[in-house]
Length: 292
Ligand code: PDD
Image 1 (cartoon, rainbow, N blue to C red):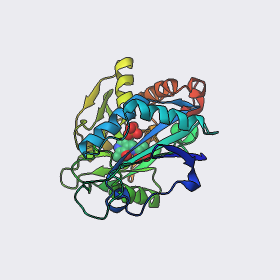
Image 2 (image 1 turned 135 degrees about the vertical axis):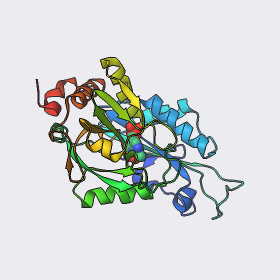
Image 3 (image 1 turned 60 degrees about the horizontal axis):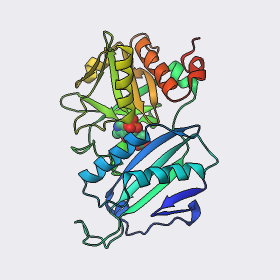
């Protein structure tokens, strides 16, 4: 984790400095990505870089590097690291300029990449499942953009932490529609079908969610991209989260309500098993699922 990438150079972390006039710092005027490497192998790099460019386009960020260059830099950063099970964090802001809300006429974007310790949990957590809590949907209209403006997500995750929960999920106060988690997507299983909020501008289209959709297709499980409410979710047969950090995480409790029999469900376990195979962990199925 010694080196970071800062505006075209690989430098030791202590030497990487960003101006107090960076618009990422002043306005949250920037975007990010989090990519997972499993034992040195990058998972879905192309999808993450494609989404990075989608976010950049949405906030009209000037281009600094081509997608292929970014992929090369990600690989180089990983090569420079002793740690091979890591998350690669990328942040791209509108750069340094005197504080004015409107875009500066002149500024070079800031582009940073660093390695983080993975947020994934020990296998036992997947065997048991987790508790999640609901939190009011207080975000803006465009959560599909992976912006560094994460204050509602920060407050929601802190609420989860203070309530002994793994994750907080956003629920609209009026309609009771469940959108997504503070850093994950939320899915439920009902009568053998997997449901997730439609992938419109109200949620981030998770790369892990995309992988779950592919797994459902492969296993012949129906996937429905449709909104569901809090009441529908707590009466579901199974609930789970997907995300680069959460991976495929069974949920057994929402607020004070136990989901089904309080154990990870069979459909979730099938999807998790396939996810483990796709992430080069076939040998660890028993640890994560408690079965042979
Ligand atoms: N978060 N929804 C939100 C709001 C997220 O922040 C994330 C990921 C996801 C899942 O996306 P993916 O499967 O592509 O990781 C959904 C990252 C991991 C984070 O902020 O650390």
